[in-house]
Length: 221
Length: 398
Image 1 (tube, rainbow over the protein chains, first blue to last red):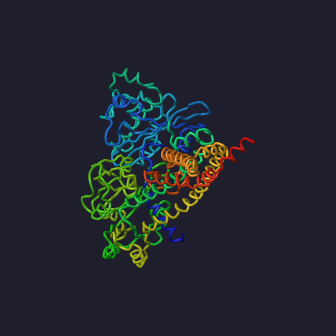
Image 2 (cartoon, rainbow over the protein chains, first blue to last red):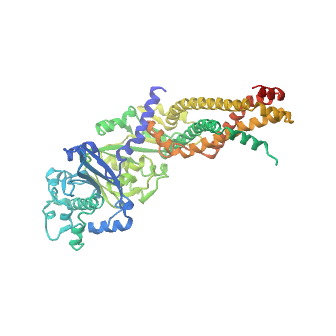
Image 3 (cartoon, each protein chain N blue to C red):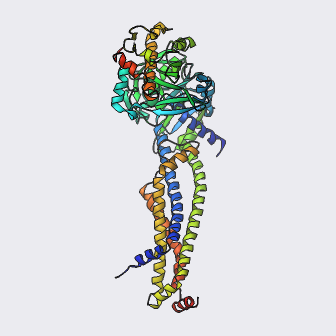
């Protein structure tokens, strides 16, 4: 094979695979699990990955249950029961020290990927956008915005209504400030994604630890 | 009770069950390699052809130096792109061999909010008049193509839409440029690179990225009866262009695959030879052990041809059984072979890589049976030549 032909072959193969490579991973995995886990849990020594879906665990009934806890039905073409969720269980030696989980959320101008690092009780240690398409992306990616989520858990989010964007009665979620009022819909999308993320983690990893609290609240905020 | 010669041959093989099973396994392994190998050859070529057909054109004209375009995109975020003049499109379209041309302009925007340190977003500027015609296999999940060649609209491949959570009617923001476009179509999954693409009208891409009268590539659909090699040579005469003929690329890939195939085929042939020797050895040993028995059969009136036939049928049964088991093994393990081969190959097309069709199984069975027949000639001839009295006496003496 001569050099020219080799070049053409390389050109063809790279052209063929370029866009696919850029968009190959649909779902919500960490881009670089080894690096990201170490960044979010510096004390960790390892992690395990679990793949789950609502479809496989409980089907339609579980979907309805999760939608009820979220406070809104799943929407659109891509928020469905068969979406695979990738859950990272973080360990230090043999001891489980926390979880990392991300969800996709529709934003005004594109997709959002909201990741939460949680302790074993389901309390948020870190919040961050792995991907964010928004006119106010810079403001939302400021560390100060993510810091406002630290220490919150699903119990705090039960009072937050993802439809109206209000918290009744006002509590810790209401104290999260929108750094870009002109991008209110993206701010609400971030809060919805966080609540959805916490509900899914509670269902799949925490054995519904926070379900009793939801029921005590009369199943509606 | 009348027993057929086939039954006698079968019973003879069962007398030394382990030896017969091992011989069948030897032949089965060789048949397995053969079926898998030819199945891979067929599957790979079919998948590669489909991938190339799915591109919609057989030839791509790009600016000189563009073999490294993709790497440049990755490294420099599109700043190092090479361009063709838009006027070349008309020049190419006038050639008699051309069935259609479609200009393309690929652009890249840096998205600082993708991942930890940002990422690239690729946009394919396509001509709404010619591109859909060439890619007629693209089907929409929702919506359709652009309303206007310069409209601020986008069509998303299935995976790109899923990643960006876009549906028809949604707006999408092009990072870096801060330009909004309206989503007018979401394509169905195709299993090709189009799934990850975001298509915009070429005029819109030129406007958004500030590029005038320039392109990054021209897709050419050549007429079915045209001489592609001659046309390709003609294209090389155009100034500052590089021609990527997908037919040529396909041939190059197939040549690479063929090299690997020759190596595996050599191994398969050695395996077949070893299996053949195993068959000869098994049958010959069986003949030696049954000299007295053959002698008695002959003294009872069996002709040399009957003995020859009996031993030959034994060989045939061994080989046919081996061929059948091997073919079944290849069918059962086709999926595993696919996964393994995919890991080993630097480029594997989408779709199944191993395609085992009934014709292939029958050919292999025929081939293995023929090998069996050839392997059986010597032992059968040897058995046919056994002298009755000598063989009976020799047994008595021993």
